[in-house]
Length: 489
Image (cartoon, rainbow, N blue to C red; front, side, top):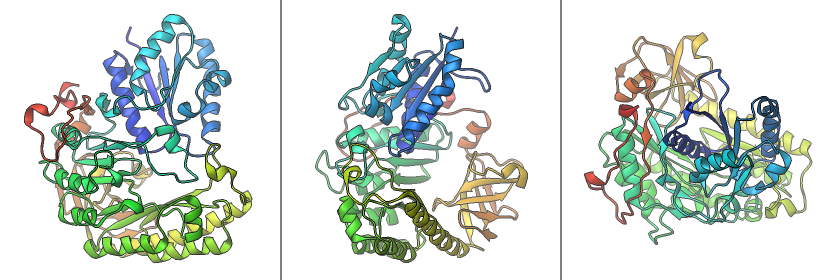
């Protein structure tokens, strides 16, 4: 009988995309997704290690699975991702009912490790110290019929004192442009309308093969892919952000005018302690140049509150930058002490109550800014890519939800025949800090192949892409892999 699987993902977009690869490999190995409400034969945890509570979250969840494992010894539990790379064999010691532990550099080993653990009736732990093959050579079962992730690099060459990612993901490795474009074309061939280019430091792309302007060239090359309607990317680093990227964003029609630019702190002193190689003046100058080229650009950010030694004056600097930068939204974090990072050993670790109080003040200021920025859009016409699961209250409000080209979430009046993956135009009637509302008749509705696939319950499955092409431009037709996705499901 075919064994079923369930993947539970914690963490960032990289982890979400890695889970798509894990699903693709398991299905190639003969597994099937577990039916809704049924108990899976294999549970895979794809973990994150960025936050302090990541450990507690994983081990707490593993504890809840222990009775299921005792009742069904044939059930297998696998733990992978960043926390597995960090804790290694300690996971088996703390949770001996786990069958497989694998790291960030050997995702492709999972099916073999599951087979070996079942055959030997013993736990298997395999953690590689460095990446042997780029993970996009692996097949991927995509979560969405209309939007897809495309990794352009993995790893990071920065040394931010608060971050554990470089030690878990390794040094930056860049894919060749032809491989990236082949994967983009494979997704578009399956009906996907939007891709998001992923990298730990996405705009340092090209450092491995010595082309400082490679990222801007890649954005322009994506503009030549017929049928690709939207291109996004995340996350860039201010130190590597160059004016040619701004020009590529402004001049390439399918590149969205949305920029996620991590700030982390509005204090130059704290930025220095964080080992972030830019200062607030440089950061705000980038934003000014982006808005000069694209006045409609929506800019989002990441901010850490309570970094060791942060004073009230430092924190006020962050509030000042937030007010000046006019972010459409911000991902705000309380500093989390991670063993193995330089910041964990710094003097001046702040009391929890101080960090919490500053965190709440930051959220209040950012919500005020977000609301003011969103109000400016009331009465404007927006193009939405209709999404599934974005509006938690859609069923009770009789609305559907979608994302504008600037990334903002818009809840609109549900209309018969509109499916996730379709494209609609509507008018914004109300603004809140975290979303917009469009209550009125649609101005336009375009049915798409992505909508057809969503309605039919089909999701793309892309084969691994590895071409080794060194130049930009569309790859020859023979080089694009035959996608076994929606049409073959």
